[in-house]
Amino acid sequence: MRISIKHILGSLIVASLGAQAAVSVFTCEPEWAALTEAIGGDHVRVVSATHAKQNPHYIRARPSLIAAIRRAELLVCSGADLEVGWLPILLERAPMGIQPGAMGHIMAADYVPMLGVGDSVDRSHGDVHPDGNPHVHLNPHHIIQIARQIQRRLEQIDPDHAGVYAERYTTFEGQWQAAIQRWTIQAAPLRGRSVIVHHQSFDYLLDWLGITTIASLEPVPGLPPTAAHLNTVLKQAKDASVLAILRTPYDPSEASKWMASKTNIPALRLPYTVGGTDASVDLITLFDETIAVLLNHGS
Ligand SMILES: [Zn+2]
Image (cartoon, protein in one colour):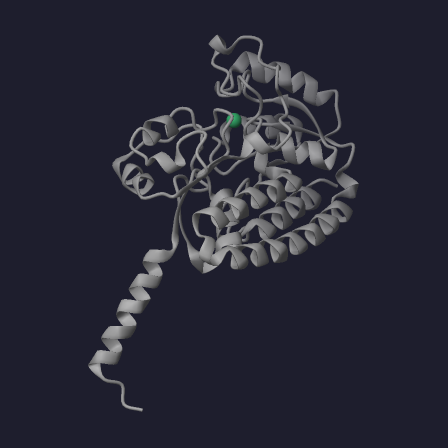
């Protein structure tokens, strides 16, 4: 069949209407972007405010982010003050539908049991986790809770595709539960081990895997390591059998490397989130890679 210009124009218009119909989603971190795409598929258009090499505690509320959040119909962030330095500034320019309390506003920390609540003695000392640890995504059971919230909200925002979101959620949940079983078996040798961390970025992962944190290189979450504090940690490290010194792709490496050189404990950079290493292309490979790195270096 000959395709006329009219046909081509017609399909372009349909395609562009289709693209416009996608739900516009603003996520604060790559893990929530990946999860939203897993549930929303072609029906969502997702922007992530940060990438894996950026510390989500500290980014600038730059104009391109303001432009992106103004279009958003759904917001998915970690919450619990992780984004307190920049998200409130963006929200001043954001639509009503994604403001706190609105249907299009998801803070993951609101839907999962928090660790580290009450640990902060005095927030005036610069603790960036004053209300508990906000790095909630590395317990895979939490991912399911947030996936469910994303599905529910997408169904309300875009009821025409409710069936698609429900089906994609069910598929994701099945794959994810199978992956949790696999990871639990693979990571069993890590149970009971201990680690040192740069920042308390991995508390939920370590709690899930049964690994103890004996010390952080930061004296208080958010404060850079000091010589005095590192020497205290060094003494603790020498008295314990430590698996590894863990940091994210965005943490500075100097303190980890110094501690590794003094103790022969391996300093490991875990992917932390989707995109943190070349192999961590989605949430499944993020956990695959994280467990593989711990097992490969931890014997
Ligand atoms: Zn933190």
